[in-house]
Length: 280
Image (cartoon, rainbow, N blue to C red):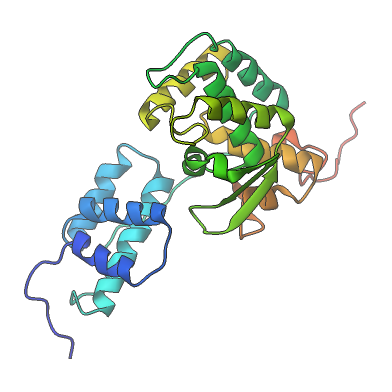
């Protein structure tokens, strides 16, 4: 017979035991600890209250991912007899993902041109804003890496014109051959860098988002820095059909087609029915 818990168990206490039993990336550890701290007591009421509060400020896709982590912690606590009840009574989330949009090649070039106009401006860290924006754009676009990895890229990851790294999310290795322009942009930033990182040393993430919004407004374009990853994937698929997943480092071959490729830009390869009506 399962022994009943005599006191309320908090997610943050479960999280430490949960992480101690697993080999996971540092990013995942941070996410688990952050969610566990916010989750409060292990109960349906606490999880539902957290979900409702988060749904008011972030997308349903984000909340669904956070719900999954909290339920994983709860299941672990049940299996380890830390709590008496299996997870139940937690509200479900039907997240609607909008159609994927990416910048065109010409629009990415527009961003680069506009970024170069900031070369006469400097941050408190000593970073040249124009050099920093150009390096960020080229690295994000050509490597297809996530923001966290871009922020950690350093001189150690650069081997001539080859960028080598291990993805923080999956733990899988990747390498990309960079264009001469991207290599030159990275070297310019490394000349200014106090700690060997390429772009991550220049400012805090919140300030980086402000600069990115300002750049998009100046260029007259929609989107966020996340569009660099999907734009690169779209243009890879345009030139080399079927290679976008390899570029992104996905384990699931269909994920790129479902969530990262802007099929409106790849008309000759996009799934399309035959024309039934001839237009004169």
